[in-house]
Length: 269
Image: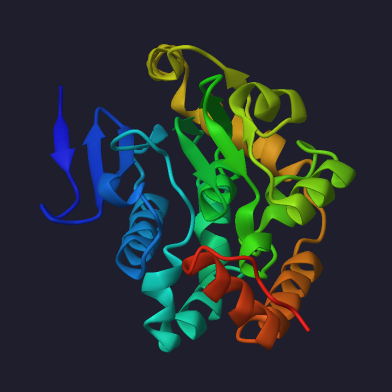
């Protein structure tokens, strides 16, 4: 067995390469694996590195601790105004921006990406999960399209990644309500591929099955289902960014964010 560690010791992201399988693990358990700039940059670098690996067979995406990802670390990002422009700047080589690449970058890989979600799957964490080809979760996991609580809309490519998985009216309802729903509901509505008591075991079983398949076939199967359903994505992604730019920093968005941080009801004019 060949084991290769691709991440720094104190990185918020662990990347381990074993016999062609890249295990990518979010490593901010004390913060419920919330997405701060350091973790975002590590994920973007990871995606770029994986994109260029010819020996890659599959990716397993998971998280340390109790929760998969509680979404954007808003307090951290708000402390660095320049980080907003960084997130919305174009991702080199792709028709979308960097924050959208956090989710869509997994779909762009030529091999299957299996994600295991437990605990919180909120906001940006939910959108990253949707970027995976196969999404395994537990019945008691908690999901939410939470951006609305901060006066924002989902802008990490969900108009692309959720297409064919979740009904448009359901997406709208969950975006407007920002309500929580459990893993069983996530599976019923299409967010999760399967709901299991032990998704880690199921992921390892699937990886063992993939190991029995031709790497060329695995890559061809991924491309078949990814590209055959493809439509023009650029217009949808451009609209996401356009609408989000209008919201970011507006009076109502600032009030929504401050109310969330101060644990009080927002006051809108």
